[in-house]
Image 1 (tube, helix red, strand yellow):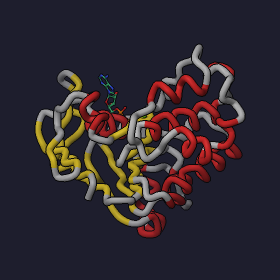
Image 2 (tube, helix red, strand yellow):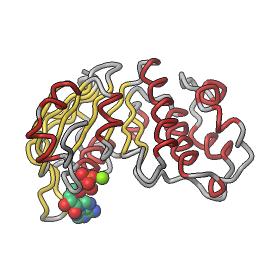
Image 3 (cartoon, rainbow, N blue to C red):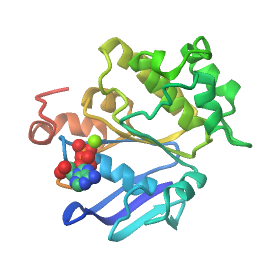
Image 4 (spheres, helix red, strand yellow):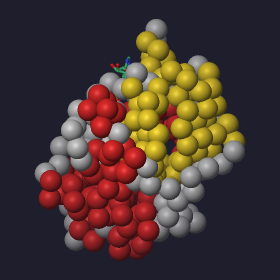
Length: 233
Ligand SMILES: Nc1ncnc2c1ncn2[C@@H]1O[C@H](COP(=O)(O)OP(=O)(O)O)[C@@H](O)[C@H]1O
Ligand SMILES: [Mg+2]
């Protein structure tokens, strides 16, 4: 396992958000984290990325406990977060947005990133704010890759995108999967997540209520309807 959360408890002020949450991501594995709005999915990613410090529990990354470590140090260890808000620099060009994240020795140098994200290659001189939602999401993922992460955390990459564009983003993520990038993928779009993931967790009120393969989840109708609001996928 490249990442293992053990009985993690995270609070925002007095609000107890993650309750003894345990989950894991294997090397090269794509793990989906599903659950309804407010279940604690973003908080889970923020806890791993060092943006929220857990009050108790362990966050083991490559067997080392990084719970409470500062975000910039977590990033340097090889964990990259693609936040829900994407955080593209509007007034910088695509190329500049990518260069900012460039790291020496990254196994994802600029040429390789642009090979994978062909649409960005055609947009290198465009400003961030000139990109479509889909292109901005691609840029956010591409920028995260530039740092050469061993673990990619993705927060609702399909959010706000038209179905056709979701397919393009998904294709790119399939390619990253083939490159054996380990991913923890948060999604509201269960269909997309289940199509990509090797394993799935469903969380509710900050605890895991299901763990298994996408097929196992598809046949767990009770879980699907209670926590994901879907009959069948
Ligand atoms: N910065 C914050 N301060 C206080 N409460 C927060 C903050 N961010 C999120 N929460 C609360 O934590 C809970 C989980 O939020 P979040 O992790 O964003 O859920 P999800 O991503 O699954 O929709 C929600 O009840 C939300 O209102
Ligand atoms: Mg969220």
